[in-house]
Length: 286
Image 1 (cartoon, rainbow, N blue to C red):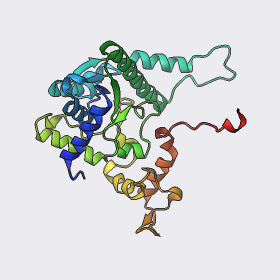
Image 2 (cartoon, helix red, strand yellow; image 1 turned 90 degrees about the vertical axis):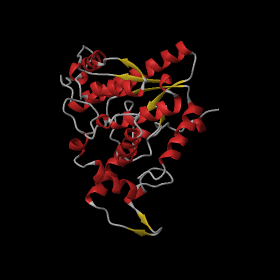
Image 3 (cartoon, rainbow, N blue to C red; image 1 turned 60 degrees about the vertical axis):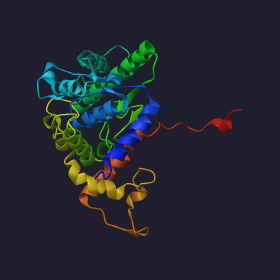
């Protein structure tokens, strides 16, 4: 739980103002991008926040769904809105992946998996954000940075797409648990920056039709949070090595089923949030 919201927001404001002049983010209508956009508007002013709405299909624009909700949020907080559909990008990428030609050494499947297609959506969104961000920077002659919307609950278990929603220049809520993100959303509703009915309590990454985070994972974020706090090394942000969880400095505590799930996900996926490795070769060079 956040114990000092005002000083948390003050720290974010100071960091942001030092980091960039203009912020650009993908506003999906979910709680993470909602809270991030509110923090940006408070820190930089609504005229310096570009919210990008990236529907894959017309159904994403229906009232109450992803971008139907995101456009209402942007209007309420007075941020700048740009609608950029991504179906053309995604479909072109998917079709190119499965295209066969004479150089193919073996027959590949003519269908992409649901997850692979979902990753195409996530990477198309990030390509759009960085392309637009650089275009804005050239046009406005100001610092423009892509702002991430990942939270600690998702990032710790690697529930994101590599080079998709795991990519950003700065993330504001990356050290906040999902419950703390909801706490901030409630705060922004209480002070009137947003309407309470804009808060989406059913998290979805929008990777495919009907996708739900908690259904796909098999656990709710609320169920995983104690395991994340229990296993996370506060000094590094990574899990303790070897699944060894110190208690009072020296003792170890047994792992529950949820602990094991969280740790397995963390170690399998933490490459998504680390710099890609480089083989050390300078000793062989002048």
